[in-house]
Amino acid sequence: MSAAQDQLEIKFRLIDGTDIGPKSFSAATSVATLKENILAQWPKEKDNGPRTVKDVKLISAGRILENNRTVAECRSPLCDIPGGVTTMHVVVQPPAQEKDKDWWLLTILKLVK
Image (cartoon, rainbow, N blue to C red; front, side, top):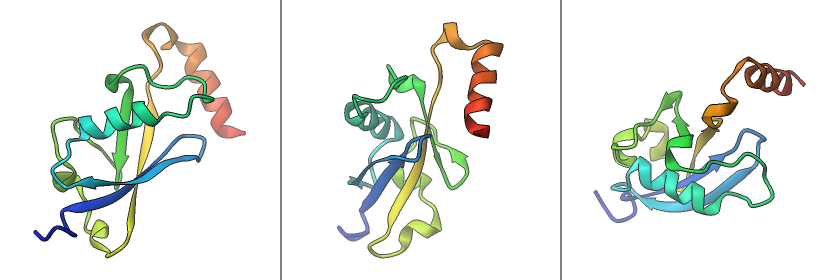
């Protein structure tokens, strides 16, 4: 793999449609490291941000990415477009005390609006 192919431009799309990035990552970067990067760059003005890596789910090409996998293992054939930016969707799990019927109802109502 050449040096150019070893790098991947990734942006992270949050549930409200805003983005973190894009930023260049090595193909050897783990999904856990991507999540750590999201935590570090999470916009301070946004409520309900993730507290730990465990609170974050990354979705790419319709798949939830596992922490122990690398970017290279998770990449889609669409990522091989020269100069392209891969978008990964970020889902933040609510803290344990919020995982009840009311939280899910509120989430559904927000999505319906």
